[in-house]
Length: 124
Image (tube, rainbow, N blue to C red; front, side, top):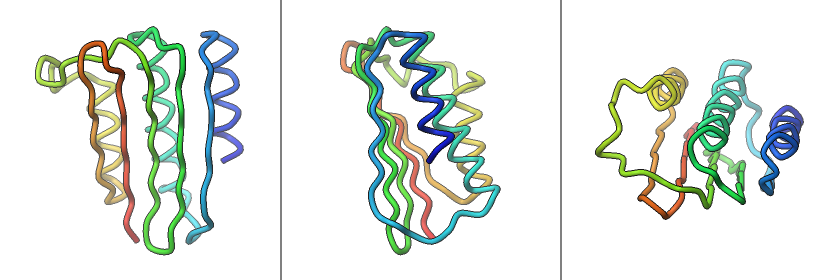
């Protein structure tokens, strides 16, 4: 959580976009691999927002449940049509691979002009 908060502060300083972190619950401890994968997914999502979205607002939610951890990154930027993105794009591919490495699911929802939401869920 501390590393993610620091990354969001740096993102906000570089871009001028409002970046908020919300943390809910206290769930099971993450393994080092799980924590790193979730952090890198969030980091890549923020890089994509910075380089492509021209967002004014970014919200990150990290929710710990007794048997599930959810990470959601939502922006109000330009959005995109997911069907038009090359599936081999490194950023999206990297996020999917990191999620798969820890047994998590990852969804990217977006539409042109409607912002983007990256949702990663790790069931335990």
